[in-house]
Length: 474
Image (cartoon, rainbow, N blue to C red; front, top):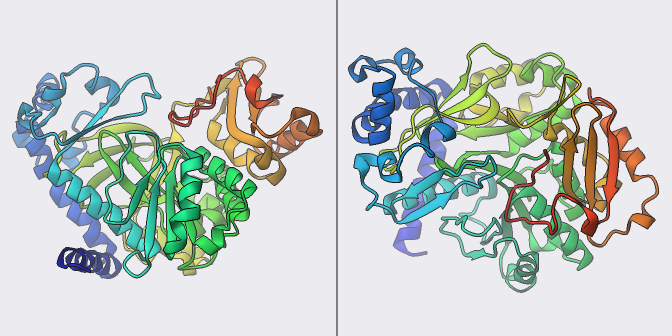
């Protein structure tokens, strides 16, 4: 190792020790203490935010506490990016600090933008490596990283890195030629493309275990049944600590690419909540069916709120605290349905339900994410969320092995679901797939749905499956 690598390892170790040994309340207090200065920076230096505060008649001098902060206007993609010039969104109206720009997926019909500075990139790299160290021990395992996210989504890390975009042939070629030279390989991509890599890799006899392959899923929500499917298909033991891992991270293009990440314990909690109704309802409320993804987050980087307070239907609101942010968004609603929980609250519930062994070692607070709040089909007064369909589809391995994962919900009075088969699966060889799907979904409170199964090329909602974009299920 050179001096720079040694210093980076030292910093990671020091920060991890802090997060392992500091009282949870003190970690949360760090973020609360930083929220007001972050607000004042944005309020005085970001032209667009100045105008918004003026329109809402906010007196900057009177925002002095967390309670005052909670009264500030909530921002969103539609109230910012279509209405303001990009320079108005930057600190001091200065775009010259830009080293890189990034757009959101455009899935909502509106593009948002992230502007990164040289210092910002260094912080992102440190943040990503911190998460990788916490989950994969990259400081002690020779690690190769493959970024298979769509084109333009770059990863900042100190690890040896290949960036393939959504080319499964390139990923598999790297696994065969480069990965054997490393102790472990980590593949990052959208869940649906990870499935394609695994399905194609199995056809080519890839030995996932021998290569030490782990997966990090980003870009889209996935069910616990999907994780179980991937684990079964790649010979991965999800219950083995310090082993191979299937984890996820969550970012927002206009905020940061690595805001939340899972850990071994949060994965175990989610897996237990799927099968244990007592734990599930203790964590997420009575009659909870769908188990959210359970993440760690860093209060000193992101101040989090869930609004409205004391509601069972909350949305996540982000305030970015770093002084390096070119676009310092304050109280920004991402549109994700979620819930916040302190480490202490989580530990209490786990202890009461007999899962004390899963109390996370990191003393970080928790954020639970169900997916987009407004993305559902309302059929005869019943909300059908794509996330519950994802949970059901992957509970049957036979079903999961035959589909691409793309489905489409439609018809508010006579709901139906259209499903796409994999390219190498012939419809004539599938005899009872629709019945298997209906059985998998019958355990959930869903209206009866007509199931239509299409061969790959006949699926009417995508002439060619495009992994560059998120799957549109509505």
